[in-house]
Amino acid sequence: MDEENSTKKIKTASLVLMIFSSIFGFSNSLTAYYQMGYASMIWYIVTAILFFLPSAMMLAEYGASFKAARGGIFSWMRGSVGEKPAFIGTFIWLSAWVVWLVSSTQYFLVSISTLLFGSDKTQTWHLLGLGSNQTLGIMEIAFLAIVTYLSSRGIDKIAKVASVCGVFTLGIAAVFILASLAIWIMDHGATAEPVTAVNFIKSPNSAFMSPIAIISFIVYALFAYGGLETMAGVIDSVDKPERTFPRALIIGMVIMTLLYVLAIFMCGVTTNWQEVLGKKSVDLANVEYVLINNMGLVAGSHLGLSHAASVTLGRVFSQITALSDVFGGLGAAFVMTYSPIKSFVEGCDPRLLPDKLTSLNKAGMPAFAMWMQMIVVSVIVFFITFGGSTAATFYTILTDMMNVSSSAPYLFLIGAFPFFKMKKDLDRPFVFYKSMTTTWVVTTIVWLVIAVGIVFTCVEPLLKGDWVTAFWTAFGPVFFGIVAWIFYSRAERKHVVERKHVVERKHVAERKHVAERKHVLY
Image (cartoon, rainbow, N blue to C red; front, side, top):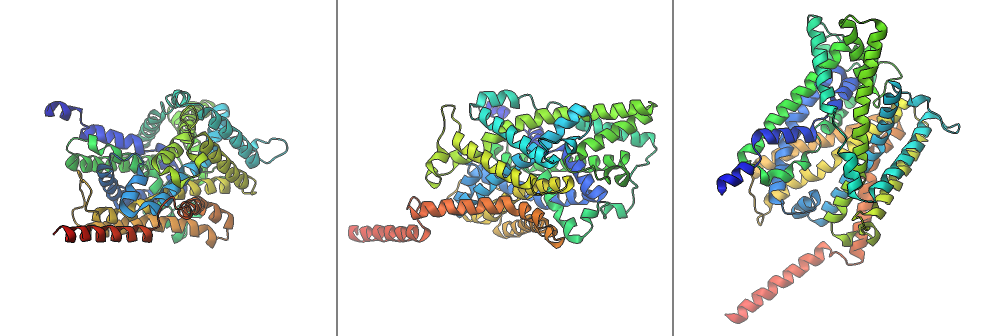
């Protein structure tokens, strides 16, 4: 029987594949090259060592001890530092997905444009005399309204859409890397972007020249390794987890980091940064298609095709990539419209939220909460798109918002870890950090890496006098943190949850009562 159970357990190779598929994102490499050129490689390596590996072990310990808890990270933090910080931290985690809806839908529209026309034409779109950004904002709000309506009607419809997405993503990454590698070999090791010592430490992008801007790039690398908390839930299904899990994480970290670094380098093989990416028409939303289009153009030239045929090949590569992104974005939009908010509603104490937010419709969906989410996203989209920013600034705001909102919840999870380790009444089937000294040292380092990246990302626009970007970059975590504090304070005022000093007084009274009974008995 034990042997049969052992065969059903997740082995090292399977776990590595799960970690890779849950976290690795090929487009992160292309964004990194656009932001920092070859210099982004060192930050991906540093982040893997100082964030990915140590935090993954922490989350694995959380997942092992709270494997029966339904609330995910809310249950982890509540069992470590109490309900109030857990509620606020999880609400900020929810903000990451709300901001994701804001930014990813805009990128989705760029993908549609590239699929239809072979390149990003969104800056030429105008509706009823509105500017291009305003037009995109109106289209995004309409798209999200449709998605929310369909999502609220049931999971079966969502699953059918989500099951189609992501089919070509790995293939595109493989084609890009292999084609670039072949071009590199055919050019006898020559690269479009010169390989020099300076280029490995200095960004060609003028926006990442100052020390603060360079350090703020950490949040981009953090985003590339994000999603670790989703893997902690499988720890109880892993064969010999105390050995298999750390081994799989180390292997996964090495493979992912090498692939990120290789993909960044391959961008430089076919693309000279100043000639291709230095144009005003290139931004964070379309840089993926610009790089892949250019790779197809260079590949066609090396294959002896005419210039017209090479241009066509580049456009076809872009359209295939856009097709993948359209399916992936469509499926993700449907799932993310309901999944995070439903997980939050089901995981936390329903007494902490207004009744309407926790109510489910006939399809088992938190429809009212989903529509409230749609309204919040629409308001954010409206103010950003009608704020008068240029396309490049517009997409920088969206990307920085997404990166900061995605990184902020880790401050709570990582910060709560030492307190989790000090709990004496927990079952711990998996323990990686054996001593409290090691726990505190590692926690401090990881927490500071995250905090420095977030703070510098928020501060850097202020130093340039760009108050709009700074405001929206910090908006998600700050706004949702304040809302969470208001909800919890409201519950305290209604005595739905007991204040800490009341709980402590009750515990003292109970212990006194028990002592008195023992005294009477003896």
